[in-house]
Amino acid sequence: MPAIEFVGVDLDGRPHVSHTVDITEIPFESNSYDAIICIHVLEHVENDRKAMDELYRVLKPGGWAVITVPIDFNRETYEDPSIIAPEERKKHFGEEQHVRFYGLDFAERLRACGFEVQLDRGEDVPLETKEQYGLLDDEHVFYCTKA
Image (cartoon, rainbow, N blue to C red; front, side, top):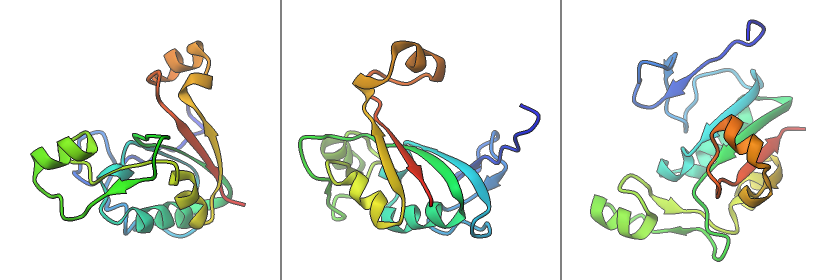
């Protein structure tokens, strides 16, 4: 869309991104982005609270962020920084590079950074929307806004 300026960022500097960025130290000015899409990133970040703070900081007042993570609504977030071996991380968190498995308290973590949070549970998202945006059936979308 010609009226949208897309800035892609990634820690590993992949070819499709504009900037190599550590999400815990975003090198952009505060209040500079209208929208942020953060899909399956935070479960890889050791200091996820700092990353959430940074997302909030760079988002303009009135802006929005769409954030997704693997989540289990039957328990609180499970994390253990002593688990560092890839095979142990896979066993505990579902993937070799994950450092936690989010739970019931995820929305509260986002709110603690200042976000207003609306949860759209995967089962409530219409099938046509899932197909249009490539969402999984169990993809839960956290729609966050900054007042």
